[in-house]
Image 1: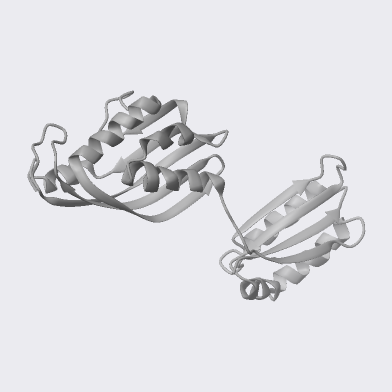
Image 2 (image 1 turned 90 degrees about the horizontal axis):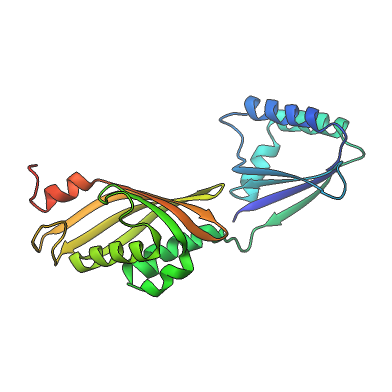
Length: 232
């Protein structure tokens, strides 16, 4: 179970605190068990800060606390604070990254199930698409995505296995494995009935909870070779 430690403190020396944290990160490289950190400053009180430190589990957090550098860092941190920091220890019982949910809906509901009405709920009206098998602008906008998704669904019976999702800033990247059987014409190739497979990744840039731009990377030449269009 993911574990988060919340550290609440007051300081007038945040630049020094930043330097301390950078030094601690460098000194514990390869040994610390922290997976994600975030520091927030109170907009109503400029000396009030809150740190959120995420670990894979409580047990991993305890391993981190036993590092000698952790104890030394804490002592130096206290010296930079106005008073003693307070701590809250949280077991994460629910976690949702909303941008990831939108990306998953594209694959699971729109692409695989053919719910093309959901395009309006997931993609911005001025969506821009970048696809290795599409001419520039061919899949732009909601109607462009509907055409492209329809083309793939008409050509193949297929499924996606989403192997990993990574969210950073306003982008979500999904790694996937795809398997299909060609049942219709695709890129001028008559139906072959062949089973084909490929791996790829898709990165979506989000704006206001909707997908504003997308990049689709996959082995297009490998797909065409499996269909018998290109030599092996």
